[in-house]
Image 1 (cartoon, helix red, strand yellow):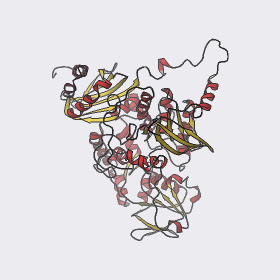
Image 2 (tube, rainbow, N blue to C red):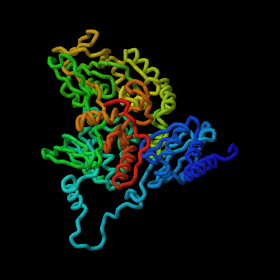
Image 3 (cartoon, rainbow, N blue to C red):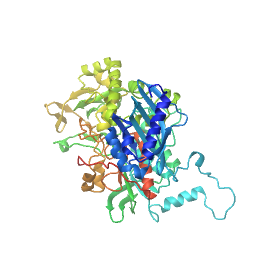
Image 4 (cartoon, rainbow, N blue to C red):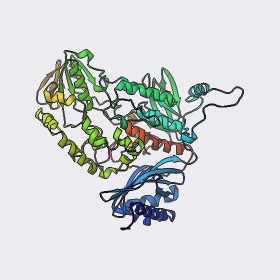
Length: 599
């Protein structure tokens, strides 16, 4: 092998893997993996989102799953040539299983498989009607009494949820619910998306007016329809809202606005849910088989209660209730918190000539937006990446191919570069008294997001206001309120006409407790986090995001959400899992997540 070409090495490894799998020899297959190696499987082999580690982990998964899922036909992806850099060979691959087809990414190191990503892309016999399989649309010829497209859509909207029951109900109509609704629509899974707002996109429109996407546009596409080439790099919130509303209509999603879920109850005997909905004043009972909570990581406001709040003579708002600075010109405003929302709100208030003070309660990781784009995202999500042939789909797969166990090792050098590039900026923040951190291990924003979903700010200008003292900074814990303001634990009194509690959001699991029951919430356990045993992400190690996009301990209950990138990418795998179950395809789950932390 030492004298063979890179492509030959990849082909030899794939030939050996195919032979072992064909023979049903899990031991031989696992021997192809390095001692420190990782197989990340997105429902292709495991019917789960699962990462196994080392030959023993590979052997265990294959022993359990080989007879059921029958992975085979691993090959170099057509049109792709394996490459080598730094002693690591990387190859795009395709494969199939008993019921589907997939693709992935393999890395070889010292003649052994180091990382392997396998992702199911479609189910045989249930492929999406796209590309060469797209529908004709026009029905040529003549037929009596046939219905137009409009009449068919109107009939479907009138019947689904009433005379016909949906297979899946999605609670939450933000980007997560909409992306999943689009995927399920294309797979022919009868689905209703429920949302309490008046229109799709109101989740964004109703937020503070300076809100915009802090991630660049290449990272934020929805499935099927990419943003046009003239779309702004950072999208303002109302423009996001309009796009979601358009998308919902164009993708023909059965979206019930002004529809609030009152309760949901699972009947084990029938294997269905009873979901009671207030649809614009009408009580409707839905009986789906599958229930998806897509209520968002930023969906359930966390509003701490402090003594004296009822005595405060001003206004107290959670950041989700704050619609902007217009009413607060010339007023004193205290913003409690120091992450994304807190910074955005402080900057907008300063622009409106309010007297603004930020209360920093704990350290915050800050990275400048342009630096994050250049160093953190540029190789995968940028105009340059697209020009280099890195499509959004490829970028998603490259990102997904890095196992969470070692992802921080790739992130740390990037954030060291950022720290060096913006050294003067960070020195200015520290001089202003701002308490900075880079994550528990220096791995920065992405790992903080994956581990805890909080504790960071992507700087789009507010940090300079703190450096300049235009936004005053106070550090400490809120102790209580009095009639005129906020009192910190050290006795500092902050006069205020308005206090904005930018104190984050509770776990998505809280919605399960509210809508279903605390018992079911505890049965499922904590949602989000990797088990990294870092701040706000207690161990043991999970290897994947807890309870996201995969089966949970509560039968027929799923969680979906995250940022736009995750909503786009992982909606495919959740949709395929739901479609397979609807069609009666056997889906034996390997490694169903254990519950280590209650809700």
